[in-house]
Image (cartoon, rainbow, N blue to C red; front, top):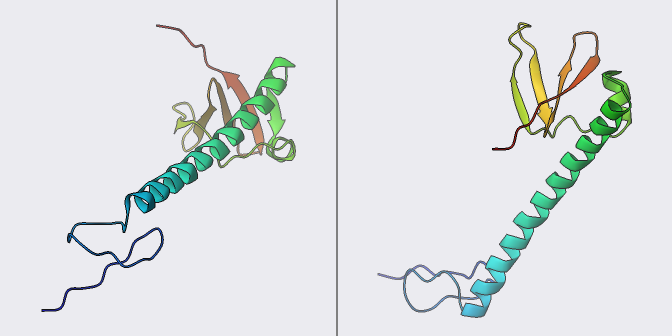
Length: 124
């Protein structure tokens, strides 16, 4: 019975030796794992940057006393509605959701108005 050839996921070099071996060398294993870690870390940094920008936009509006803004205007300020930190059903309104960005909440009304609120946070 001929053994199936296996290739290193890092360099595509032929793997020889034990049947459960995944990499051709320790150096390839290290490079592969470092690359995967770096890619995951870069993605988390990218998402965190978007969330921080969203928070900054809402914080600026809320701090200036603005509690209502149109969806289009908020989007125009650079708010990315694809990235939020929480979402739950609004108990006082059938079908709408309360979304959150860290300590701020917002509800998008049927008329395209976004109502901004702030959660009271307590430290344990």
